[in-house]
Image (cartoon, rainbow, N blue to C red; front, side, top):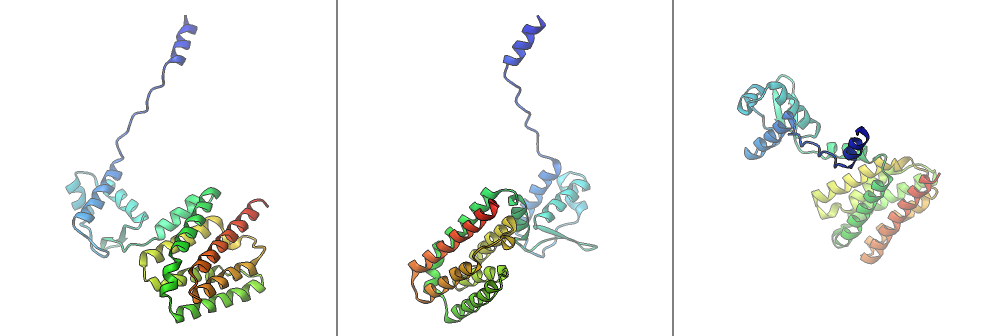
Amino acid sequence: MVKDEGANVQAMKSLEPLNRPPLLHVTVQESLRNYIEANRLKAGDALPPETFLAQQLGVGRNSVREAIKALESIGILETRRGIGVFVKEFSFKPLLDNLAYGLQDSLRDVEELREMRRVLETGLIGKTVEMISAEDIEALRGLTEEMRRRAERNESFAAEDQQFHQLLFHCQNNRMLSALIDIFWIAFNKASNFANLDNPTPLATWRDHHEIVEAVAAKDVERARQRLDDHYRGIQQVIAKNRNT
């Protein structure tokens, strides 16, 4: 009889887990976000004291304090000791740090980041060809010359690489684009440790950048786009080689 009951239990569908309500400090976080938006608070504006917020929300000060700490960790608020809590100026840094941390063990996500960078830059290079100044072209040539010197000494030129991609699109005066380029570049390099990978062809990497600049200077959109594609294929090959060693 016991055996039959066991068989019946196994045949039954399992219980669905209960949907728990969100933790109180999470609800308080949302309330504080809504308060900031509803009152159109800007960077540098102060929030009311914790005691006032707790009374308004009908919760304890500890819940308010936990919510504030959580919002500090993602760059929305900042506490100035002895003064109060203020709305913080927006920064991509918390996003970059969390993104790089989350991707560090995922080669697939690193490859997806590389592809996003490729699509973003090849898609917008035509506008750069139309708008770029002679001064920016000369600055890019200066960067690629420094890359060449470092490549000949078999040194990393990660800093110059980052400057190159920023300067390439600087003429578009698009702050969101600049921020996205930095996000993809920094997150990709942190997550893949690309600057420290063994690059078997540093001069080829330099040449990619050099050819991109010369194509842009010649106002040749298709060649510039193709050279960017070549550059990102080279990055993929470096990652693949290090993955297999």
